[in-house]
Length: 499
Image 1 (spheres, rainbow, N blue to C red):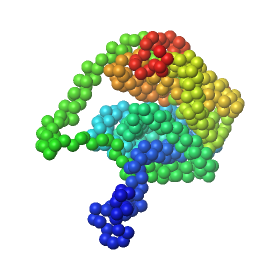
Image 2 (tube, rainbow, N blue to C red):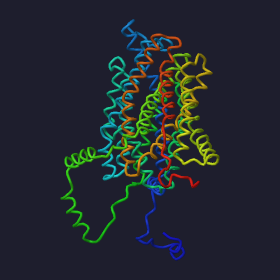
Image 3 (cartoon, rainbow, N blue to C red):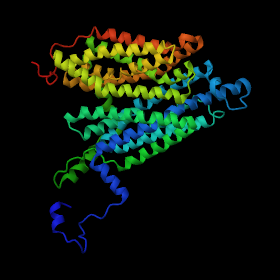
């Protein structure tokens, strides 16, 4: 009801039938989120990340415990609960690294297989249903992992890899990320979009910063307490999707004859089989001539190597508990340190460095981002070296934030890479980039798990082998950036006005 209507309506008396009925509590909550879908999306993401941290950190401890129980059951009968240093023996830790490595590989596969079908459903049925399905599939996977860890004598821990089959419902984390970015793009302008995407990253980091100490506190009581709270919060995220407004804009209504036209269109609509064949034909006809560029080939190789190298962050907690005999709750604070460094890099360091280069050297954005990527690569590799050589906790604590400072590297590479193709090839280029990154993720887990296994067998300084291997990949990437040459003129709109 408008303000004018309020001044003319009677204070008492029969309510006009056109006046909306009072909203219930549930309807009020729905109304709030529908007024501001961007707020709803950020809130949902932050809560989901909060739940994932509460759930994820103790689950690594649960994997270790389950592997430990099965190992000692075969060695000495496993009559009693095995905990503590007995679970830090090389065979148990090697199996834990292997399980986590292959788990990443199996969890990437559903996103690769279902990205296109769910992308089409998001464009036809709506973004919110696909978002809800993603969350449900991820939740079912988590519950499956819990069941496997609850009965280690019945289920081998390696079955957590098979639990990823539930991600076929919804598409997993890859589809979830794509849907979220699409929803944000739906409700923001081009000028607002980059800021909104940055806020997505910031909201995830803040959620991690809050959840990490809470998870550590709950784990000090019992790891299952943190897992239970995480699952409860995650179920709340699924419920939240019923209150989020659909961001897919409905097709514009035409004249009264639109229903007749729509019926005719439905009859002429191609079947899924025809759409699939058309999609294959489209892929086959895609112009990939830009891949002949030497600089683009270098950039794609660098993305492949850095994605492999970055995966080593997944074993930081296991590395700390093994090398320094920390508890999992103590090691979890490294994750908070990692997130804090990420947040500072995102909100302060990179914006300041970009502004400084703009003022001092007046470089085009692509050239500026290339120089920033070169600087970040040095810090990135240095952090990996310090973690790999950390004979004391102090070196590890210094190395973790330095390694985390490499978080903007891939985005800086994408920015520079985009300047090498014309606008008509950007979509194809980004598809190739996604294929490279997913391809490297498929092998990153098993490869670095094998490296960690070698370090466990040899012991001592060899324990840091995965981090030193990652440092080598990052050094090669940094050197490769020195051979990249961007065009003298960039596309219109990329110059900062210095001309």
